[in-house]
Length: 366
Image (cartoon, rainbow, N blue to C red; front, side):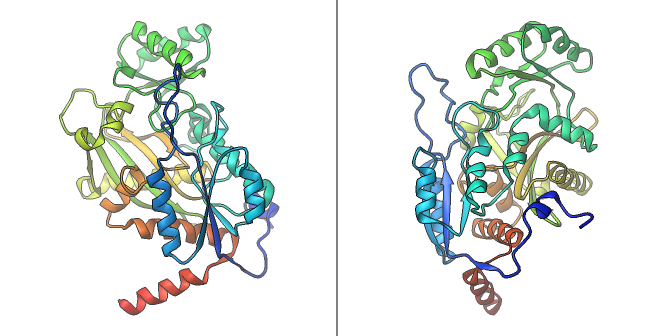
């Protein structure tokens, strides 16, 4: 048994493959913020169009699909329907740093196979501080940063200006650019403290102060398990050139007018190779599964550093970064979803006759 992953020791694969016919999709549906709530409170949740797109794709592949919104009836409905497999895009409820683990924990407890990373990796991946610790220990380059939990930590955070002219202030456990605004990049301790106060009050969690990297932003997709590979990448830049570009909440909400996505052909071969290698190393370091997106910025020397990990990447065919970069890298949305399912099925030793049938039909067409 030497050398096997822990998960393989704890969950040995069945000798015979189980057929997948019914697939569930677990999700949180985006809603309007209520009076007194931050207007980006539900920013991570998916719109109905994304859920419908996934439902259409999975149905087209030949599966019967059931939808499971995360609510008080989720466990009861899962037990009633008993899906063979779940495509999970649920972000979780509340303001807890382990919220992305909520649905995976339920699925694990019910013994239902699901796509994507397990509950442990999702919890670590959402927490920027724990993610940084793991990546540093694995020799994956990340920016210098400090966590600020209270006023007692402010002196330590100020020291970051001795190694960086500018810093960026982020909430410790948020995604989808929540809490990252155009004015989150600061160049004085006073501005830094104002942004930290905003994080404390608005999101009720510690703030992370990080050295701001001045170079190009690149995001890369990784897929696989035993031998994960980079499946594409793209640069993210403003339509109108600015001195300080930040892929902030405001920019993401207005991406059609304000953001330009450029495919891998616009990145030098040497840099593409570095980004792909580091993306896979980060994926392995955090023991992610099936598919993920890794975000980078270039430092003063033009070297890529990981600024964020997305083990639960958005899958909207219209606006999510992973489908966009995959398309710009020559892929199709249908193939991306099929790849995700194929990787997860293989990991659980599941079989899907409809997927095999489609592959045979495609080979004949070619």
